[in-house]
Amino acid sequence: MDDKGREILARVKEEKVRAVVLQFTDLAGRVKSTTIPSHFLGEALERGIWFDGSSVEGFARIHESDMLLRPDPATYQLFPWEPAERKIARLICDIHRPDGEPLPTDPRGILKRMIAKAEKLGFTYNTGSELEFFLFKDASTLEPVPHDVGGYFDFSQDAAHEVRMDLMDAFEAMGMRVEMSHHEVAPGQHEIDIRYADALTTADNVVTLKYVVKALAAKRGILATFMPKPLTGINGSGMHTHQSIFEGDVNLFFAPEDPGYRLSKLAYRFLAGQLKHARALAAVVAPTVNSYKRLVPGYEAPVYICWARINRSALIRIPQYAPGRESSTRLELRFPDPSCNPYLAYAAMLAAGLDGVEKKLTPPAAVEEDVYHFDDAKLAELSIGTLPASLTEALDDLSRDRVIQRALGKEACQAFLRMKRSEWDEYRLYVSPWERERYLATA
Image (cartoon, rainbow, N blue to C red; front, side):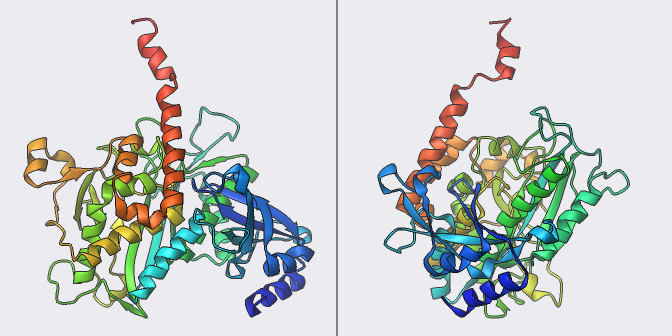
């Protein structure tokens, strides 16, 4: 056991922690966990904890089911909402095979491999995500009613202000730096912005945020959902992600000599790579059937593969440069949604960007007009492509994109495609209430 592990054991004893929750995610991004008594933590840190991986989506086949959870001491945090007499802590785990090798389909391990590739180039990949979500009044119904009637940045009508404050208090207590929390456009819709950090830390924070939001909402009898488009006819929820590449304390995306956007050649190449791989990337960052009901014109979600500063219909936006804040120069990728697995999403995003860097790609000219108003002829004239219109289209693109496939790894990519094809087939074969309403009496 290393010094960090011994430090955690000392903290657990000092803080009188009764139990420790060991967390990880499956390929779909669902949080999985097992709880151990605190006196068993030393053995868990030293040797790991065995579990049946065959029951976890994408992890193992039945004849190779034994897997090992290895807690990462750097992720230790107390759950601040638990009573003082029953303190519970959590650790996020990496998944290993019985021989000690990292599991190729462990999402956290996939991101760590891509980060290692970037580090060999001298790069630190930083991300900061804005998570949108809905709160509904009754956690027991499938006919959701928004928890409030507020709109964008509303306060006086915002019945969920206390809920957001509870959430922010919990995040800060768990060591997460929250930049902003506010009501979003739709009734019952909210946003919490996580301050940027290295991609692994941010991915851990996204997983934690989603878990905490659901846990604290449930304690109030409220349903919290990160479903991209839970209601027809209103805005869906995105996970806009800000990205930058640092070398030490220097932001390599900033270039003072660039008159337009203050972007370096590295930034332009990274941007070009993400545009090039956008359609395959969609399968990973917008990974559900429901994701493509958000990615339609008219609801502030990007559809067209282009970039800009003031045009919020663009796939990638360049936030305004502010003198003296060179370190804030970044690219905002706007089509991820919060249903994604953040480990897979950041790994794929980094791979797409690095491909542009390695191939020295040049992006097309920025499009500062509202692309939603372009007709097909104008789109063709400017060579502006579109994102896939459905999950199955995105999966087809992923199955042809070697760069994104290599980022996920062969085993994980095959498992992901198999899992998502099954999801699409289930949706395709389901007869919905809309179909019965439209065709039952008229066909």
